[in-house]
Amino acid sequence: MTHLRQTLRTATDLVDAGLAPAHAEADLARVADRYAVAITPAMAELIDSRDDGDPIARQFVPDVHELDQAPEERADPIGDHVKSPVKGIVHRYPDRVLLKIVGVCPVHCRFCFRREMVGPAAEANLTTAEIGATLAYIRAHPEIWEVILTGGDPFVMSPRRMEDLTQALGEIAHVKIIRWHTRVPVVAPERVTADLVSALRSSRKSVYVALHANHPRELTAAARNAVARLVDAGIPVVSQTVLLRGINDDADTLEALMRAFVEARVKPYYLHHGDLAPGTAHFRTTLAEGQALMHALRQRLSGLAMPTYVLDIPGGHGKVPVGPAYLDAHDGVVSDPRGHLHRTDGSCAP
Image (cartoon, rainbow, N blue to C red):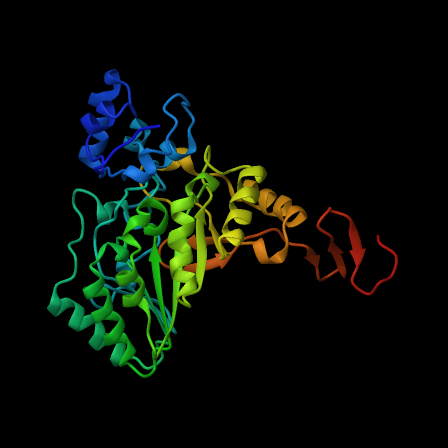
């Protein structure tokens, strides 16, 4: 366990902290020149440097395999740019938009699907004028029911700026839902202060937080306390998890993670299939492997703890569920969680 006060950002930092061997420094520096590195003290302290396969280290410590780009990988794997009518807005679905308010994160996940947008060539935080243009777009489109704050990680903003944004969205009558996507309660729980929580609350809109975590060890006591501050203030929290080879691609780990979410009053929401971000092939599973894991989870977990397994179709075509099928509608046959077949009309099984 490493005790740190500052975020690690360079290969030298990683070596000095004992999170990488000295002989790997040059290779890690090449990766860091291509894709940004940031590991907060909270995450560094979770890493077991004696374990070459530590699931926390795999998420945040760079790997030279990131410099290998597969032919199918792309800089904008889910098509943010092609669905962006105004800088900072992604309007992929009729009733909701992403508002990419900042271009920075407290940590840099090695599998990030926006790694080309938040790395050394990061998109800058929106200026005051650009934020005004995004709000004007939202006002001009009455079909927009939900605004999803993302980036980067919007929880890196000051509470004052967050409150200003909450108030501005609160004045748009047709917007009913404000959703904030963040990793902060897990990776920098000390940032979830009373002022930040207050900045999220709105008397006019329903506010949600979507929390990204991928392994049960991330839900430390400090993280659970940060989540509790949100939930106790009346802000529901849902989860997002990425299915990652060598990190959580086994039923035991996913079961433990989903149970930990529910116990922390976080509703499991999405389990994302890995996107085609450059240099991330070593993290991706197959869809068949993901479906098998979801089938195993259905046997182990209550519905309250089940996420939806989804694929963001490359190119900006949207997100769809890709979990296992239980019903053969043509033959009127359904499989139970144990794999036994039954007829939907109650007659004898085939």
